[in-house]
Length: 435
Ligand SMILES: [Ca+2]
Ligand SMILES: [Ca+2]
Ligand SMILES: [Ca+2]
Image (cartoon, rainbow, N blue to C red; front, top):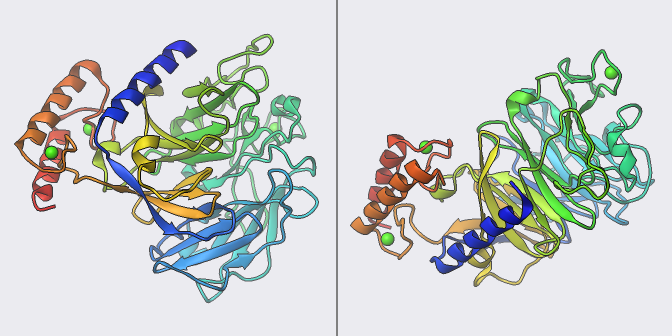
């Protein structure tokens, strides 16, 4: 699909959304934070939310209250794009109490560190073990996310630190890559045996290459599929999606940088083996710093189930898109809907799940915010009442989807329109009669 066509579709959808009643709102969970960059709920501890502040402090919100004592205070450099950038809990956190951070200790070396939660679930032991680190360089394009994905492996995506050629160098250079490691041992890491360069030339940690500054990426909690936002240079912002089944297929993914910025080639386009074209891209007329988010799998807004939410940090915009069978289905913008009436806040820097898989947005201006519905799930036409008109409206959307496959009526978020979606809607409709 060509770029002008993509932009045309986005523009049409934007007008359609703006004309509708509102679906959702931004509700502040916690304000007055000092440059928060990320947030995460410990597995099995739904009453607790950890919030990372750029300067190295991990704050704890317990039962809705911000605790005065931090979970941990790390020594980090905050020049350029450095700081305490993200965290991930071990899949077996309930037993191992292992917490991983991605930060930049003084010396400008991005690294993955491991902490162990103490007997007090709100405080970590002071020792941080470095699991892997990347060579010191500029405080630029350091990446920003670590996340556990399919197989229980840890995925890390350091940026190329401002040297584009690094992104295609597969020997002795992990920057500009998507790497996959096994951190389940007692110390350090081991290599997943199905990583593509095991046994052949190329560093064994690498799963994907050709990245510039992949600041945020995440996995669909239902399918395990990867969604990754790569911040562009002067031209295009892009999102790529890779199906979970491809992670162990034996070939590295090549996201294209530096020959490609989005689908645009500033010079000659390269014939990279395993090239993964972006699922979505936009020019700097629309935004300047893409910020990958999360696939929505919550219950509050069924019509959004299966949609990938993302934002632009530079322009304070929020969109969602749906991917089915590796293809982009549609893109919708939610900026007007979400920000109408919301308190002043800016620079969205992360979109992460809360304990119920609802979307939390972290704003660098100091807030962690939850996206909350403004309508009952059965109020399909968003007129504030649950009536027979909503059943009629839903059924017309469902029949339209059979013909056009926009999947607006796919309430299960499984990329298929079936009678199960109608049954689900009728359930929401009955539940909504009293709401
Ligand atoms: Ca190798
Ligand atoms: Ca209605
Ligand atoms: Ca469905």
